[in-house]
Image 1 (cartoon, one colour):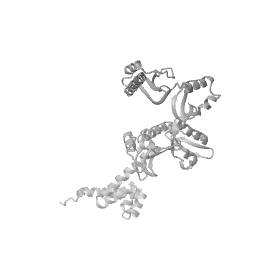
Image 2 (cartoon, helix red, strand yellow):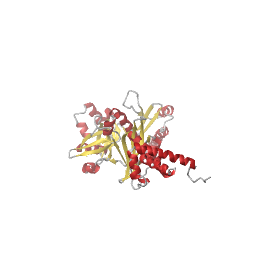
Image 3 (cartoon, rainbow, N blue to C red):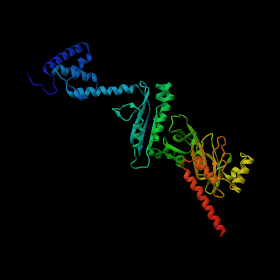
Image 4 (cartoon, rainbow, N blue to C red):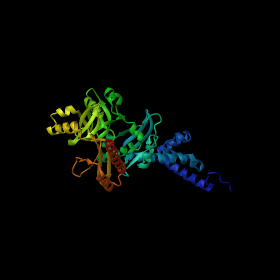
Length: 423
């Protein structure tokens, strides 16, 4: 009996397979012109690695089988490779591309991740890499995604540039009925991704006068605003001209365009440099800049930031009632009766909220508890009853000991002063 050759079937099987391959080839020659052309012009004339599609590789395999009774292992490997590649293409055809995230440092691309929606599985997918420009889609895996992003680290700078693009037009054209749902899904992806790495936040430019002086150099860059504008603090500059600058929310798919004049931006930067001293009645805030007092109030309609005017302008403004002006002049300037925000202590426990703040005039700690229906805080001196109240109702607050130490130190300081005066 003839010895078996390595990777070969026994001779009876080889003969049977050769016969079957010859019959198949004969049938294909009669029915398929494509097969006849391949057998005549390509078989044994074109290198195997130059054949790109599965059908022609199968032609090659059957011609080999008819000739030798076996197919080379590399040929089967190529067929398997192209079958998987066709699977990637088929999967990609069923995915609606939502957007992409790209992370850069000094222009160098560190990571690129695509996101989509699989219409067959009705689930979000992601592609961490491509093969021959075909996304390798897989189900969205939060731990894998956020772990990959959090591991990125800058080499030569303090921050990484977090960029993303939302394919709004493609989604509206392909699946208009799902546009809103896919937009919310993409917002969640961007929010979680941006928060996964501290260096992404450091890569956001702070809004400064350079934006007004050289706006074209800041196009499409995300910028951190000193005050929230319609609920957004990070905005991307999309257009600039001599009259106004146009911004778009950065971490949302919102199509809202925010037009800000150069004067508004300049005023916003000026307001951001006012240091807050105290919260006042009637919704006002007391601030100081360069030794001058300012009165501020939240701009609810536009920026959610503070609109500041000098103290003198506030007193002289016809927009404020006589009651407000009397309060500002008497309580703030003459009596200096207000609580300082700097160093304030906040305590929270069991749905309760308490505040400890120093009085500006006498430097003593005062206590107030947030009421259910009363927005104004009513402060009282923080003495022994307050200490007992805190121990009873705020025992699990992380700031309890800080508050107790502050009150106790105040009592010690008061005794030292009394003893000094008795000498």
